Image (cartoon, rainbow, N blue to C red):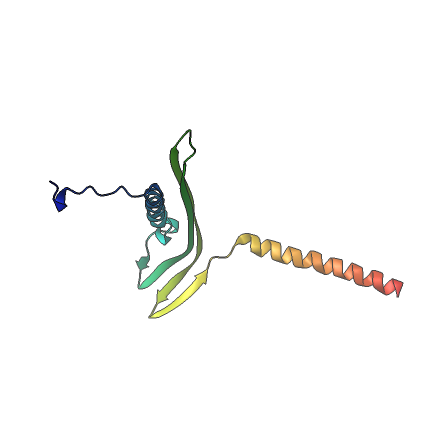
Length: 138
C-alpha cells in the first residue's frame, strides 16, 4: 500500500536543469564581475584632508554570457555548458567638496589634447589647398 508521502516525484525535464545551470552560472559571473568593477578598483577610497574631500569618479562596465545544451542523438547523449565575461573600468574624474561646494573635475585624455588639434590643423591645411585649386580652375 502506498501513502501520499511515498509518491515518487517526477524528475524535472533535462531542459529545465540545463536552463537552471545556465542561470546559476550567469548569476555567479555577474556577482564576481560586479564586485570587481567598482570605483574603488580604479581609484581607491575618498580622501578627506584639511576640510577638503576628494571623491573619485569612474566609469565601469561589465558584460558576460553563457549557455548550455545537450545532444539527444540516438547513439549518444551528453550535455555541457560554459560562460565568460569581462570588466572595463576607466577613471573619469573626481569631485572636490570644499566649503560646502561640490565641483566635478574631469580627467582629460592626453591624446585628445594632441589628436584633436592636430586633426583640425591637417583638415584646415587640406581645405585651404582645395580652395586654392578650385579658385585657379574657376
